[in-house]
Length: 406
Ligand code: PLP
Figure 1 (cartoon, helix red, strand yellow):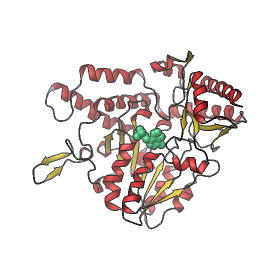
Figure 2 (cartoon, helix red, strand yellow):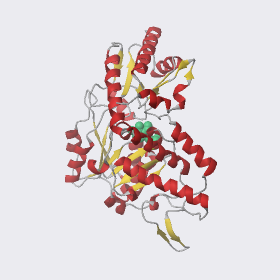
Figure 3 (spheres, rainbow, N blue to C red):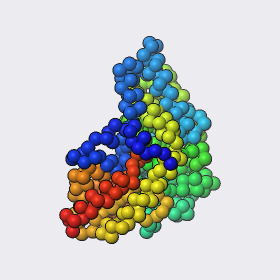
């Protein structure tokens, strides 16, 4: 455990007020706030060290290139990956998963092939696979969560058939917080020769990740949920899959030579990084990951587990609140609706009056909303800087909303 107040002091935005109340920021699942070191790194990069990367031979370009390229090694360390050339830098999870769909899956899947997905995937890990269904006749096989919101590992394994070409699955649900046993799924999938793509957008935020130990083939992360800038991210790719991938986007940087007649490609990872990247965003992302590792992922997980248990016990005391998913194996993400009340948007508006920021809507998880039989929920998602006191403020604000709507 750590001194949460010392951590809070690193995030300037946390000391502001909203509607004359201290900000209680519980929308971390959508995007996390940024520590001063990240903000400073962005300012320094633009104020003193900015130029385009890779192609320049002048001092500023060399500095920018060195800083930008240095982030690959930081991400590799963060994910427990030995070879940084297996880290492809991008703008976030959405780009990472689309790259896998276009570069790896499309050329090798045909009508009748199957992709296994859980029902609690984010649209970023659904829509690219619908492209394959629409365009190539690939079948999507959905694995439901149980009544507690847990995903039974065996059900995922049972969904594998000789036609399964990929399992695409989240490590943590952005709606329920449910944790998935990725290692067990990867072990079973590997035994049957089925690659596994892990959406680590939420997972990597809340727990230590070691991709080599998990044994997955793709692991996607997104910078803005990891306390870094938006427009930054990365995907780890297993070396065998990397060798199988054709480039998705064409342009500068990803080529070796281009003539009127032909093109030859750069080696991975550059082969998959066409065009001018998010230079400063990526530099900021590296600083954010260093910041998280400096605190320690175990310490962050322990703090959030404590918050999760506290929030769970306080929320369960509100018998007019329907909290979705009761599984104990979850990260500190809570989705709920209010009996007899108000649309989730109305609840979130009342909470905002009390300075409490939560998200309301379908959370880009249409199949899960259908499964739960709700159109929208409110979601309170916690980060490394949240406190038990903030849980109490949330509860008071919910009671106010209930009084208004009941
Ligand atoms: N996957 C999950 C589980 C998410 O929660 C999100 C963002 O909410 C995404 C994917 C998409 O991330 P991005 O929009 O940063 O690409």
